[in-house]
Length: 111
Image (cartoon, rainbow, N blue to C red):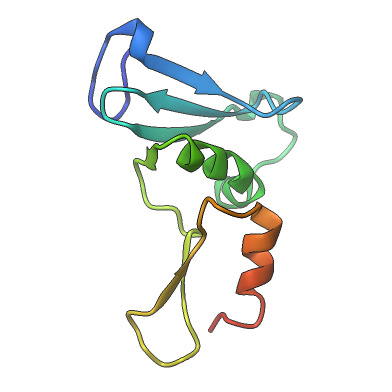
């Protein structure tokens, strides 16, 4: 096994976690590069849409960020363009609040 981001093969620095009862959704952590990837095992899921599954498991991203890891690939749900007309303005989901708080903060602010 190796890190999907940096290729590190030191087993002691490769970790993962998942939410209780959510074994199909896993976060793989690389301690050398401090990145993570989200893995979805859809073998036991009736129907899955990767984008929706990613959204439904934002809480796992929040935990990984709180632990000091960065997502290896862009997350379409983590940054949003604001209504204020400034194309560069974004609202980032920060690790300091719950996913519910973050989603509530977005309400009414999306284009």
